[in-house]
Length: 402
Length: 137
Image: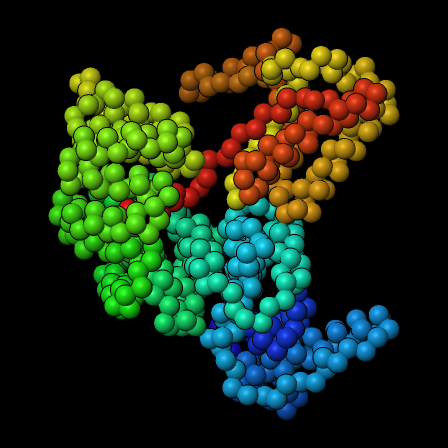
């Protein structure tokens, strides 16, 4: 096995092995240490091309089984020496009988542990990427633009937190959904991620696929994966050659990935057929309707508005949903109808001014639109958003003055 | 998580709390040592919490520089003894909330000064613009 193939395989196997150990009752932090040691040993021993040779090097026939055995031994050894240090006997040394590994259960158990409610969202994100995603601490640190030592500390604090929380049953799938969506969202950027080797959006999709495999009957898990895929399909069109974000209505739709859209739509249809609607499915339905339009003008805003009505029903106190719905109302019933709804929302709501500016522009109030775009640019939280809104302000002001 | 810059100013900030604006060069050596040790402990604490990004002190002796046309040497101006706003240094942190950023800034502001009393120094807190734009539409 060549080095990069081996590393790819180990990246996938590490979390699976960790899941087995945790399911066997190992505490999280010790299990992770043991898996890391086993992976290092694998790197040392599997470094020979071709099959196993006489002295036992080379890739074993069952790499996962090999890793589980080695990691469990390391865990037991560590527990033994820890317990002898503490001058007491701990009977964890009996290896459970080998059986078929229940990969799906393990994945869910690991994910729900990494997304435990005792953790902050950022800690869950980091721990999930480390323990389930198999990324290195250095990769995660680079992706979040913090020093590696800071990320290492964040992950080890998170591990300490969940180590104290013993639970045998997988926790709330919804907490996992939220963390996976955060990961995807972090990667939803103009940068492809190719420059630093970590593509968080792709990681989010990969983890969501694992989750869906673990809970095939969960409509919202499928809804989340569909939502990610339907967004992900547009990624090539979302950035201009110079790296600037291109808004939805000006994207070259021929560059959308139709195979990914088809997969997302099929997943969504399967989820909706279960008749357990949730916010991720409703959002996926909205994105699917956008993806379905051959041009921005052909967008079926009436259907989109119906889905926003569902979303409002599901999340009546979510102001972001209310704001997005107001924009949809602007498309269906006219910009002034949308504006009335926007103006009823909290003045501090992020992007409220941007939405109002857009609707004023549609209504022909270019002066007010220009003013509000500038106000919105000032309050933007990302460089891309700020640049986009600044340009909108300049464009509308030129129109109104020229 | 969101990144914030905690800016310490030599001057150019809101009115200092009365009695806390003695320049550092009039403190006793021990008071300076205590102040610096506090900064070190704060950085260690941020590191331990997984929130530390960067910390940097700046010399007050800087200059303003600008382009003066192709092929020409840059124009410099300053340093200005009377510049209203002068940045002393910063800490960059990556934290869960604005509330936590303010808490860290308040802690920085509690650094000891003359007589070991808290300085109550004004700290300017500025959010970073992020790299990613959230999913919409």
